[in-house]
Image 1 (cartoon, rainbow, N blue to C red):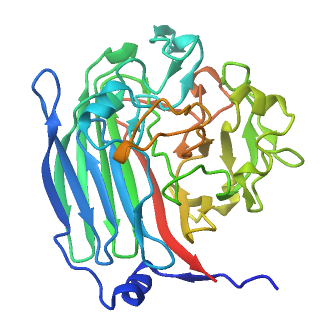
Image 2: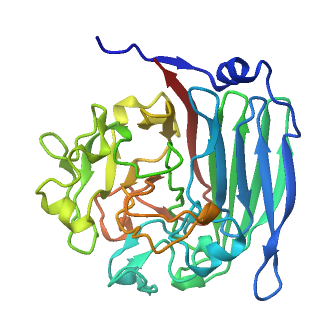
Amino acid sequence: MQPVLRSFSISALLILASGCTMHRDRVSRAPFGELADGRRVELFTLTNAHGIEVRAMTYGAIITSIQTPDRSGKRADIVLGFDSLGGYVAGSPYFGAVVGRYANRIARGQFTLDGATYHLARNNGPNSLHGGERGFDKVVWSGTPFQSDSTAGVTLRYESPDGEEGYPGAVSVQVTYTLTDADDLIIEYEASTTKATPINLSQHTYWNLHGAGDILAHVLTLKASAFTPVDSTLIPTGQVAPVAGTPFDFRTAIAIGARIDAANEQLRFGRGYDHNWVIDQGSRGPGAGALAPAARLEDPLSGRTLDISTTEPGVQFYSGNFLDGTLRGKGGRTYAHRAGLCLETQHFPDSPNHANFPSTILRPGQRYHSRTVIAFRVTGS
């Protein structure tokens, strides 16, 4: 007989494990090193009433650590990263970062907008990736902490000058991380611009809910009936294809490793999963900017789960295919092949070059706004 899975709140598990909830300051800030030019980086620690802890720094608006309990109440860090600022500066594959001005890829590093052609850095083969050579992941943001009776948070702000990395318009951008006592992490993005420009922001955390090993036994559900196939350079072809009958069908929960090595051209192009799924629009609530369920990730070993909802139309599932054991992360841990995975809520890759994709163009007088909610839960048998 199959075991019956039950969902528990994080608070209930911690009470069972320790007999009481944990009490500490909701928000703290501390130095986290200096860059070569002397600029100081700060680290903010957010803690909720149940002891969940999220750490984010002003360099790259990077989430450096997320501590949550397993089904027995034992806490572990469930995101990949480094122990110090130096690791992130030396050569991070976007661990925990906010990526922009345009998350994901733009073909041939160029786009045409209002009759003008703009040229971007080609930092990913023939294409531009995650904002170019010095995207939002490599700049210093300012941070303002806040808290209430049931939340802890930090708002991070950055002023991107006109022409930065080839993009038009001076853009004011802010990202707010809010940790709630409902055990949710809310990520909210806002931006305005002085000229028409593409904007596509996303959070590039690498998840490993077990805290070690690879992610092939993690079980994934994607609320998506279609995805956007890519060419050999991982640029969308412009097609929106059904997932039915392919290894890209995650509408029913399945282990990530179950079909990752299937004989499939798309998997060969990505060396695994590195594609954009089109979130089913029918699952959205009423009104503009409504959240829709996008993904559920489960680790059967620890019982940890993530439920991700977003206002974005897509989610990029990346299965850590380019991790190769050359990076040493927290505690000297080697990040081997598929040691983590990303679920990046976003607009579609290369949208400025595909008129049939949802637009990513922000114009003066408009306000960019995007919201993603990550719910931390556990299951037990």
